[in-house]
Amino acid sequence: MKHKFFALAAMIFMAVFGTNAQENMNKTEIEIPHISDFPVGEPNTGYAKYFSGRSWLAPMTFDKKLNVPVSNVTFEPGCRNNWHKHSVGQILIAVGGVGYYQERGKEAVKILPGDVIEIPADVEHWHGAAPDSWFQHLAISPDPQNNKSTWLEQVSDEEYNKLRINGSMASLKQTDPDIYEIFTNFTGNEVPSSTTIDARTRYMAILATLLGCQGVDEYKAVLPDALNAGLSPVEIKEIEYQAIAYCGMGRIRPFLDATNLVFRAQGIKLPLESQTTTNADNRLQKGNQTQVDIFGEGMKNFWENAPDERKKINRWLADNCFGDYYTRRGLDLRQRELITFCFLAGQGGCEPQLTGHAAGNMRMGNDAGFLTEIICQCVPYIGYPRSLNALSCIKNAAEAQRK
Image (cartoon, rainbow, N blue to C red; front, side):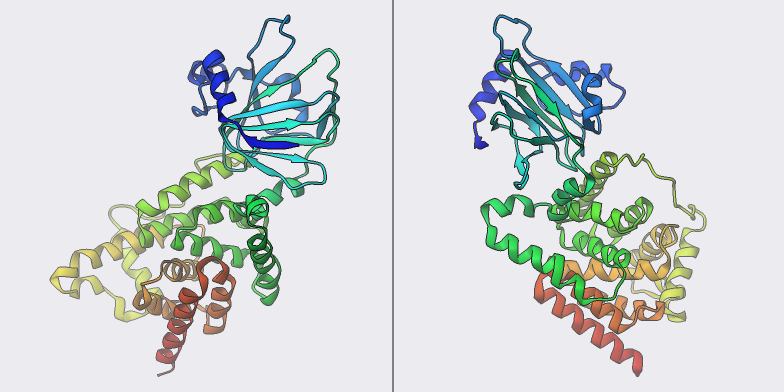
């Protein structure tokens, strides 16, 4: 297999055959984004049994005298074809989105627009979209009269999930193998084997920490594993929604978009059922009560006694942060305090708030030992300085609680 950047070839094909994919959107039952200037074509029903997920096919050459069939294939996120082989071989030119190509017995290779994959004769392989991206490639089949395609078994979820488990690390095995080995061994073996925290809680903390530190690429890689560990779509969405109060929409929007792509790739219908429990009339009252439930009676109507320069924000903390978010269904208060602790630990520079929410966690039943274990599981994603700062905040909160 030869894998190389060859943008010129794709540009030539675009110049000759290019049309706007939007022209074909009305022919499908799903909204397909603009992936490239090549047409989407029709649903790929003729080969649907050889694909996991939905695909579309647009023939690009019609003159049989040329004897070089070219088609544009569109894959929805997560879609891939079965293992298969071609008796003469095949050429793929990626033209839009992010995809993967894998030969039997070798690591999968990420393919981007302009990349050319030359597939030798009778080599078993598969290709398709990344878990979180639409993908298009041109498929060129030389000598069609003699080029027999042999379709084999599906690419198993276990095989495909390796792309998700390694996430952005998958390509690093090719370019930075030392880092790949160090990081995957640390996160896949040493760190998880050091704790008794259940997988659901562990992934809840990791997702929240990645939101805090803005690790969107690793978040996309970890998200399918969090689903496999038992976190529900509602729980994952609630983690993201609450992060808006602590990180701001400017930093959380990319995570919402990434999650929607992964959910759609896994067939999770959006939007999810609303988890709202408050309205304009009671959000302040319920938010204030939530503050009291977590931090104690000293928080009752706390916003009313704030200095003038902070009164507005303190009211918003009550009605928006705790009234709009903490009162939602999907997570209980103990879980909500845990993810808030992780948002703040991941951000860094929020040590006073981190100490306060460490104390809130302890009141909710997440003791110092538990929080310490949570930070240990998040070390690979936020590094040692922020992790050590978080441990100091846990210690300070525990000491204050004992006084």
